[in-house]
Image 1 (tube, rainbow, N blue to C red):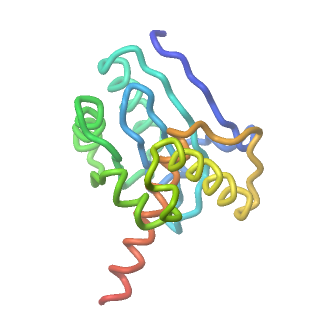
Image 2 (image 1 turned 180 degrees about the vertical axis):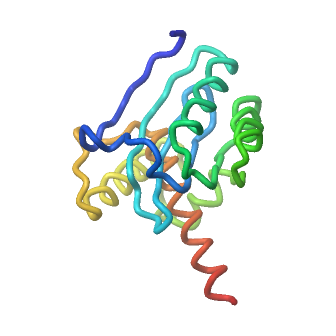
Length: 168
């Protein structure tokens, strides 16, 4: 296998197939990935490191296949890797959404942390860790910053859904 993985396990059974509704991705060759159920509860987060766009695409397909109930893919970031995630999601029949990091950072992070990328990443790690604890899911260790950013992008997605639902 051409990629290495850093996994942030919640529990031994947290990475079960068929449980996810939204997959949020901090797109890149170093990709943060977070799975949520349809109620916005985070199920797990991981950081994956891919050697090439091709290996990332193959892994994305396998992830989509493993989670048959998956309906939405949220990709934070652009470039070749972000575009590849979006194309694979479209081919898998998912509803694909794309956002920039600045959208969720401005909405969810304290203003003083948004000025610096390093501060934003640290704040995302702290907030994602607190979110998992609030849902009764103990992390073995804090998520990597890319996994935490995927979690926060997912939180932003669900907050936007709630705002849209409230306008009907």
